[in-house]
Length: 352
Ligand SMILES: *Cc1c(COP(=O)(O)O)cnc(C)c1O
Image 1 (cartoon, rainbow, N blue to C red):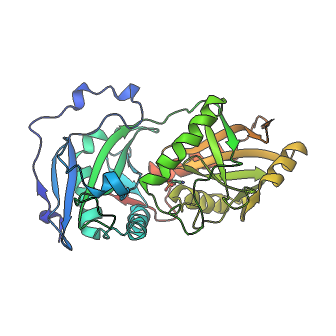
Image 2: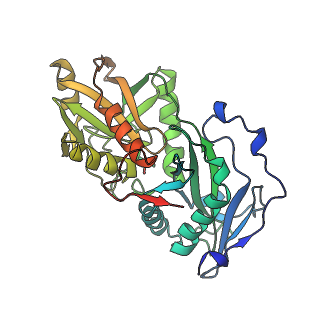
């Protein structure tokens, strides 16, 4: 299949002129078109790009009852020559199919995911604005559309891609609560999959944290709550004594594209990086003896999200103010690759 095997029904007009690109809130505005590809009885049908609109679905569809739903999050960037670039899309594609397998959903063929994605972004090129901070957020996802409340995997699925213009955002001062009871993921569970259910499971503990004045939770291992694993829906890094630490990925920790890219960029820049489990007790000790420099989340939406303080066992620990933030340095280096402002020494960028 090549891109001619995608049916394209263009919208009669564009709503782009009604969008205020200077004042976007994340994930609220969608472009003119979307991609749909249905899977029925073991076969993927021909993908269709059509105007963005709601669709009908049977009330007994298994996505509503048993949560067969997975997604990806990635971005397209425009360079100074108006060329549009994806960042490591192969990584998102691979991870998507790993998530699919874990939820007993069919794998999506490369020509549907990648071919569809490239064609859709090409059609919506005008929605990718130039300039650092501007991007087009890409949301591929798959749901079980097959009907019936029998608790078994569905026979019908729908793969879709929707696109949302995004602006870099400043999240404000982020204070986090270290989890002592709730867990995001457990060994043998679905924590390593980008499954919708992992997010709904986080909402309630995060709401409780918000009520106490914390924006996010740092998740710890479910068995002992002694190891630091992720920050909200991001991977997490700690800078102690000029070394950058982050936990190895596992069944409980999502293999973030930003995380592994930051590790490679940091190493290239001569920064000491250690991938190993980091204990809550180490973090507390490093704060008390003054060796803790930075804590930050890492993910596609913001690249890095600096954390200003954390609470553990009812005690709040404030991080020192950083003159030379390694988090912001690495963000700049990664952004420069993504926007084609620096040489892509890793071969990560893919032109649309
Ligand atoms: C998506 C996600 C991340 C970040 O992954 P990126 O590929 O860097 O965007 C980290 N942790 C969790 C739980 C996630 O769902």
